[in-house]
Image (tube, rainbow, N blue to C red; front, side, top):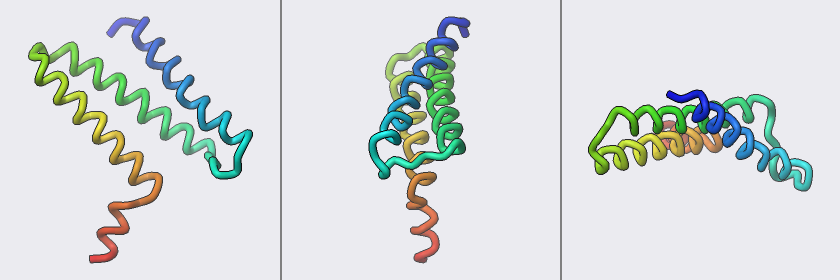
Length: 94
């Protein structure tokens, strides 16, 4: 992977993480800890990196789109689980 893309992914991740940091200055509803920022940054940077690697390895455009959507869906599901524990609540109700 090109060094420029890694820098771009890193800067994009930092830019996205500025949104909750700024929101924390104006409202009490956004209350992130350092751990939250680390996990969110890892998820965002990881998703970008995995998507880039998959798009380089796979030549068929339909397969690329499908795999990138799958990666994004997995990241969203992990984010939801970490935020509210929806899956652990479903399992505990059974």
